[in-house]
Image (cartoon, rainbow, N blue to C red; front, top):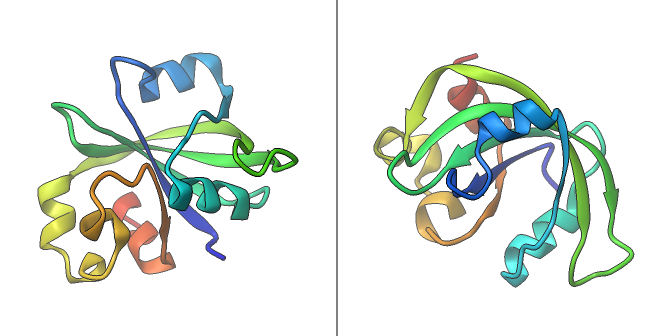
Length: 128
């Protein structure tokens, strides 16, 4: 179980700016079995990186898990709270070039929308 995750979103559907506007949202509707498993394993307080797909293809902001309702194992509902914009966005090219991500599902399984992160990966993405 990870303490940090990366959540991918299509900015034309729901961007990090939308999350900041809403402050809190339910992250659900994920269908990939591996991504659903990752959502179910989240715990309150887990750190999140929001990654925008499409033309942007970059990690753009942070969030935290507020609560997890996994009563429906096929559609867990994770309540997340917006954090801050990253001081510097991190592009997919920068992620792929970093040896920390060589074995990451983020690089190996490009379509996976919920990806566990190691502490070192989270630190790299947040510039910490």
